[in-house]
Length: 105
Image (cartoon, rainbow, N blue to C red; front, side, top):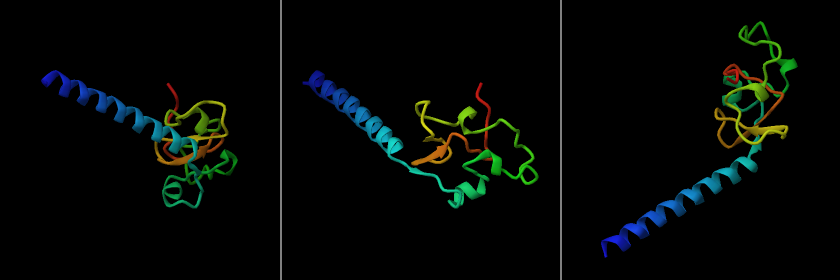
């Protein structure tokens, strides 16, 4: 009887993990585009277009840096908008930038 309960438990854990991963992937795929007016985006100086970044206000901005070459960008390459670990449930422009930009390693 113990084996059956353990086996059932492991099956339920695996099924739950798969369901969680699928729901997260769907949320990322259908996420709304991050607006520059979003409070968190404003706090981090997010711009959808790097040409609009105020280099005086953000001296850490380096020409050529953008979300597409940031370590925090997630998802599958090839899309114009992808998930970012800083903005859960939102999609950022790959041509965008924010003050938390971290170069890919």
